[in-house]
Every structure is written in structure tokens, then in C-alpha cells.
Image 1 (spheres, rainbow, N blue to C red):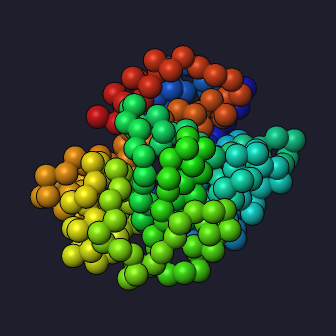
Image 2: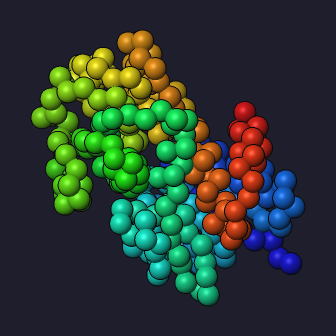
Length: 262
């Protein structure tokens, strides 16, 4: 049987640990498959690249999760509701889209249940997390640099504001950064003074980027518990892997994925 090829589409993408995660399970389960990275310059070309590379499946990271949604011929109900796709598989020459960010994020909280949450950013990851939390009965507020991307959230009943107008006296149990700030440059999601005021009123600070960012450094300077996105990455990859191979696997295999990225 020919080796099946899977990839991650994103920009930037060279930092990604996704190949380690998926290849560790392919090897452990003796599946003849390989997972790699692809630097995508233009989200509109995602579908063409998927087929020209001969992929069986793919994951999509920033900033192309909404492009992936548009590229799919069929979309599962949850991804359809949030308008963002992070996992694609090929079925009968059609692309089928899913979103594993939501269950991945909830699993990564490891039992912590906030009452109200502030999400910084309004892209595909923010959409997945916002709906996951809302489905759990948790109050969610979205803040972004501009109004444009907030329209989607307002239409779905979320409280929204731009960073410049956000009330820094508000109290949130959890503040989540879904922006790319800190991914490839030493920058914060929004103005430092406002961030400090917000973080001093929270219990947990969470950055979906899975390295130590200026955002997390600021939280630690303020003695606020902080968590990066590595556990979310591992859990969403685990759920995506099950979609790739078409059946559930033992959740204990999470341990293999964690060892792979150490």
C-alpha cells in the first residue's frame, strides 16, 4: 500500500510540532503514513494545493481556518456553526471539514471551569473556543483590534468590543489569547496597561500559542497562573488523528504524543 501523506497548512508553519505528534502515532500504530508541513502563501489556493500535493488529510492553522471552511465540499455540523475548519480529509475526491480546536481546548483546561471568559482575537480559533465555552453555559466576551471580524460574534449573541474601548475594570475568570501576537515577534495582543488591568482580575491566563510569549511573561510577572497552548495542540491533534484514520483510539495514546514533543 502506498504511503498516505498528511500536512499542516499555515503561515508561519516552520515552528509547528504537529508532525511530531501525528508521526509518533502513525509509527506506534504501524500505519503507513507521513505528516509534514506546508507554508501556504495564499489561503485561496488551499484546495488546489491539497490535491496537487496528493494529501489524504490536513490540518489548518492561522491564518487560514476560514479559508479552509470555504474550500470544503462538506462540513460537519459543529464546524458549520462556527465557520472555521482546522481538519480536512478527502472522501471520494471531495474535501470534508471538521473542527477539533473546540474539544481540544476544553480538554486542555483539565477540569478548570470558568464562569466568564475574555477571548482576545476574532479569528477561527476564537470562534471554536467561543462556541465550545458557550455550549458549556459559560459567558464569553470577544475583544479584537477592529470591528470587522466581531460582526460574526455579535450575530451569534456574544458580547464584543474593540481593544480601545474595552473596560479594563471587568473581571474574567479566564483570559485567552487567540491572536498571533508573540508567535514570531515580541509583541502583546493589545496595549500593555490595559492588559495588566485585565489580568490582575483573572484566575487563569491562557495563550493558544504553545511557547512562552510576552503575553504569558506579563501574566507571570503579575503572579497570575498562566498556561500555553501545548496541551490544546496535543488534544486537538489527537481528535484530528481519529478523523484521519476513521475511528477512535485509546486516549492513553496522548502520552505518546506528549513524549514526542518533549
